[in-house]
Length: 413
Image 1 (cartoon, rainbow, N blue to C red):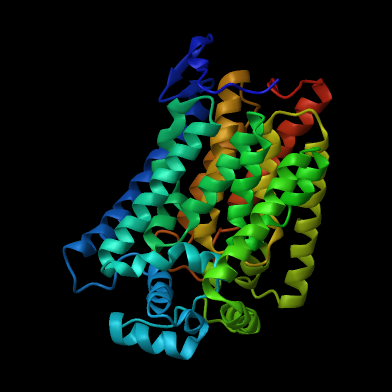
Image 2 (cartoon, rainbow, N blue to C red):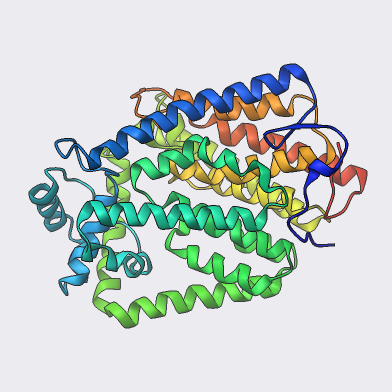
C-alpha cells in the first residue's frame, strides 16, 4: 500500500511538541537542545554570509558559486569549452572577484543548467540561485513527507545551511533525490526516474541508485532514469557540441589530480577515504576501508530494496549508502542526510522510537559542530560520524521491520 501524503500522526495518542512525539523526557530534551543549539549557530553563520550583501568589502558571498557564475559567463560569451580551461578560469576569477582557484569540474549537463546565471550581476545571480534551490527543497520535502509538521528541521540541519553558505548545489541534489523517493512511494515511477536522471550532473551520488531500482523491481523508474540521463546528455551536446564534451573528458584527469594534491583541504572531505586522511591514513589503506563501506552499503541497499519495507527505510538506506559509497564527497554534500533524519523522525512519530534512537539522531546532528561546516577550521573533524550513525540506525529499523514481517506502510517499534 502506497502512502497518500498529508496524514498527520498528531491524530494518534501521545504528546507532540514541534512535530515530534515525546516519548522519553531525557531523550526528548537532548534532541531538542541539540537541534536548537546547532541550528542557532548555523543560522548565525548564514546571517554573516547574507551580511555581505551590505558590506561589499568582504569576500564574495556564497563563495563556491563563483565557479558556476564563471562557467556561465564563458558560455554566454560563446566559449563554453573554456569553462574547463583552469588557467583561463583562474585568471578571470582573480581579476573579477580577487579570489581564484575554483575550477569547474561538472559535466556539460550542469553547464547547461547554470548557463543563464551570469546574465545577472554576481550577487543577484547568487541570491536567485539559492532561492530557487530552497524552494525546490521545501517543495520536494513537502511532497515526500507524510508529516509536514517536522519540516522546520530543514532550517536547523547543519549541512543544509552549509550548502547555502557555500553557494553549492547541495540543496538541489537533496530536492531531486527526495522528490524521486516521494514519487516512488506514490507509485509514480516515471516521475521518479526523471528526477533521478536529472541528478546525473552529480554522478558520484548515483552509484547505488540503479542497483536499488532493479532490486526493488522498479523497472519503469529504472528505464525512465536511463532515458532521462541520455536525453539530458544529448541535449547538452546539441547546445554545446562535441568540443565541450571533449574538454570535460580531458579535464577528468585534472580533477583527480586536483582532489588528490591537497588543493581541497582534508577537513572538507566527508567521504570515508577523505575522513581517514585527516588521521594520517594513506590513500591505499583508506581506499580499502572506503571499499569496505561501499560494499556494506551496497549489500544493505540491495537487501532492503528486495524486502517489503516502507520507503521510509529503503529510501533512507539508499541516501546514506550514497554518502558512504563514493570517495569524492565534500562536507556540504551531506545535506542529503536531512532525508533520513526527517524519515526516521516521521517513522518514530508514527510507530514509536526504538531505544536510544533519539540520542543517536542527536549525536549525528551534534557531531556536525566538530567539522568545518560552520566556518571553524579543524584539522581533524567528526565529519564521518553522521553518516555512520544514521546508517546503523536505519539498518537497525530495517532489520526490526523485516523480522516483524511488517510491510511498506509500517515498521513498528
